[in-house]
Length: 134
Image (cartoon, rainbow, N blue to C red; front, side, top):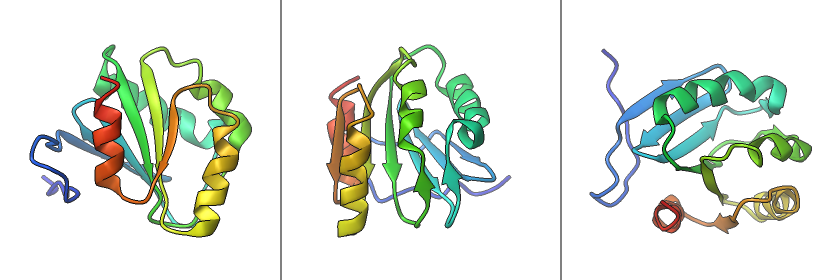
């Protein structure tokens, strides 16, 4: 069994499951889902749909929060937020970015997301914010 690595989050955020995929790693802190894409991938409905389905089977029918922890450089198709907008159990989207360019890209993406959307500079702030939507 593979050891589950977790982020340095407050004690009330316990890692329950980890899903490694060809496009990145998904961490499940209860109903807070943290995704870290692999370097150089392109995230889109086409590349991410199977990961979304696997994630939804882990989370179930309960409301959940999606946090993108952008530790690597990759591209995203912002028009594909229209698919996330249709997921009724998704309550909000948080983006953690560590650069000015990443922040600008996330601001652009916010125009395509109809869910509550916020940009952060660290993961702890993002998960605490997200917990407020559950």
